Image (cartoon, rainbow, N blue to C red):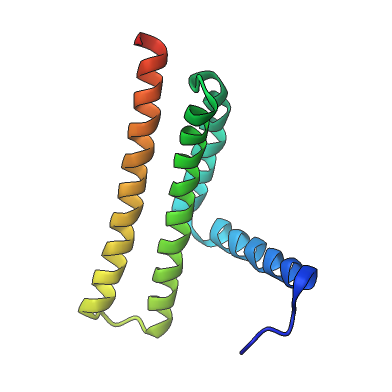
Length: 123
């Protein structure tokens, strides 16, 4: 169904849907809640660790990427669960790939934070 909203009305509706998605993730996804708490704890340290705007952006961006990938993974899982509870190889593969994407984003964030923190302390 094509949206009839344009301009600021479209932006308002899109923002409402986005907030609804964040609320759903917070309510239904334990991993998302854990990652939000971790971000809230880490982000204040980005000002101290980052010695430049680029480093600060890498620190903040890597944490936001984790949240984005977690939201996409949750969306894939929800869509697959909507299809049915029975096991199917392709459904399992899709869920595993989504989980792997979250893991890779966490590794990237960990490497980013670890490298810049190491440089701050010992560089």
